[in-house]
Structure formats: C-alpha cells, structure tokens
Image (cartoon, rainbow, N blue to C red):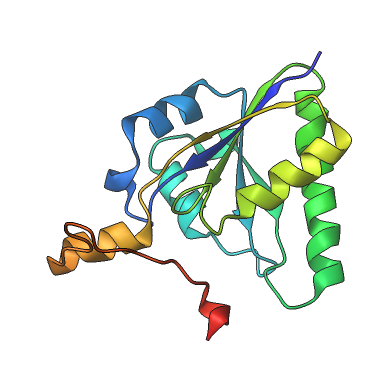
Length: 158
C-alpha cells in the first residue's frame, strides 16, 4: 500500500501568505516534513509551518545546499528513504517548501528521489506564493501587462 506525497508551497516566509489549501493539507497530513540546511537552523519553510502546527508534528529532513554534488545527492537519498518509510505504510506525507513546489524547489529533488524508491507513489503539489509575487506586491510593481512576457532565470544564469 503506497501513500501520497504532497509538496506544499508555504509562500515566501510570511506565515500570512500561506494559502488556505496549503494550511489544510499540512493539518490533514499524517506526517509533515521540512527541509533543513546542514547548519541545523530553522529555515523559512519550517518557521512558517511552526506558526500553525505543533513543533512535535514537524519532521526535519537534511538538505545540503552546497556545491558538493555527492553530499546533495546523499542527503536527497537519505531524505527520500525517511519519507518512503511512511509512504509505504499508506500515509499522506506533506513536504513544506518555501515559495512554490514547482519553481526552483527542494521538493522536486525529493519527489524525484522518492519515485526511484516508490515508483507508483502518488505525488501532488499545492502551489504557493513566490518571492517574485511578494516583492512585486510590497513594492507596488505591476509585473506584466497586456502582451508583455516574463522569463524566469536562475541566479546561476549570470
């Protein structure tokens, strides 16, 4: 019996920008996971989730956000194994990620690695407000009008 993995975008770090659907999914999940850097400090996704869930419900997954590819892949594999243990017993596991789970997110790596372990797992996402949207709103900037186009480039693109 396989469970369900849901990537939940929790917004840019302001707990008030977590969507109603995102909050519902986090509250209803059997297990809630958050990414943690190798420094161990509380990240923005975890801080946002802590505003709504008891700390004991939150499970931390180590993600090495460095240039060391082997360390990153080792952490993805370890995280996927931990999540898969719960999925194999039919649980719904939510993974809270800053911003949106489909835009430059740690969730994509977790989901891809979990699928290597559990190929038939059901994976869903709940969109979140991105930093781009938050910054535009706070600065009063209209991002696009009419037939204008928008391109997203990673910071590493130069």
